[in-house]
Amino acid sequence: MRTTVGIIGGGPSGLLLARLLHRAGVDCVVLESRQRAYVERRQRAGILEQSTVDALREAGAAERLDAEGLVHDGIELRWGGGRSHRIDFPSLASGRRVWVYAQTEVVKDLIALRLADGAPLHFGAEVTSVEGVDTDRPVVTYVQEGRTRTLTCDYVVGCDGFHGVTRAAVPGAARTTYERTYPYSWLGILADVPPSCDELVYAHSSRGFALHSMRSPDVSRLYLQVPNGTDPASWSGEQIWDELDFRLARDGRQLERGPITAKSVLPMRSSVTEPMRFGRLFLAGDAAHIVPPTGAKGLNLAAADVVVLARALIRQRTAGSTDLLDAYSDTCLRRVWRAEHFSWFMTTTLHTDPEQSGFDTRLQISQLERIASSPHAAAELASNYAGLPIP
Ligand code: RFL
Ligand code: PHB
Image (cartoon, rainbow, N blue to C red; front, side):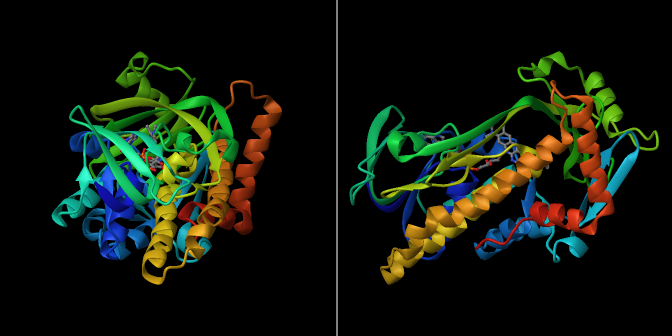
């Protein structure tokens, strides 16, 4: 098989890139190791920033998002057993806002469009190697239904997430990875109960971080900071609700409780691999960088990368110029590092490190009070959260 752009991974970054290229007449093949049902059910991000929504609209993939997505104009911060402050996006972030629309739904929409277009998207196709990325004809080898096949490409894009194979196709001497792990994880639940608050609530408490989020008017998504290595089965439903009530408490009001339909633990890590290109291999999304989820940036960074890359690939095909491809890594990394900093800032301001001293806690509270009292500090948070424009 031959194609212009071989896309490895059918998560949000691979599927959005395929959609943007297809609309511009650039042919591409998407290889996804998992089956469709698995990819469509994987619970992950829930917040789309303005640029991501703009990109999905431009890709003609926002019909359901525009009908069903929940527009949010702010978030609430809570701390110190009763203090709270609302961050208002329209007034602080130049009119930019965010949407609650689950990653599962973005993925479903993009898969449906690609299949309706009759464009190649192979499920159960596990890429095992990428070779010749420093030549004109890189070759991707994959296994599908027990048979080994190859795909020869002009360009290969690694959209295969943090545990994929493409990052390792860049020789070790040609890449550098910068990393940080955090001494805590998130226990996340989905519950069949209407959200108890209209907006997302990020809470700092004496027993650690909690987040109130949602998926729809009938489904809540909530998170608790837990120690690394926590077994989700070790928390009963009642313990989870009690702890959420403690950490999110305001005016003694309790959260609405309902049946918990999913429960999982996710570790927190920051990682960036530079550069995001080697020869004819380009890395995008989680394959190149991950953030702890406290800033809601992972999916949005993945979308921004492929918007920049699609533009560059289309320019190469239509005008024969590689200038945007040559600039791809630097263009993305500037924005990536801003999001890395913001995600680190939100994480370390709101979580309790097990080694944390009383001094550290007072610095966190001071930072939260500063955001509450200074429009400049609040605007800095709001503009990063609602997302910077894609360059
Ligand atoms: P994805 O979504 O990981 O997609 C990669 C795809 O590549 C496939 N793949 C392969 N295909 C073929 N051959 C191989 N050898 C392959 N190896 C892997 C995988 O099956 C998969 O379909 O990366 P992408 O597209 O870059 O998208 C990034 C986002 O998914 C990610 O940034 C966010 O979901 C991060 N994230 C969260 N972000 C938030 O903003 N809020 C959250 O609540 C949130 N929760 C999460 C998350 C990431 C998680 N992971 C990756 C552990 C929860 C989890 C569990
Ligand atoms: C979510 O709804 O899953 C979510 C929202 C905001 C975050 C992280 C996760 O910062």
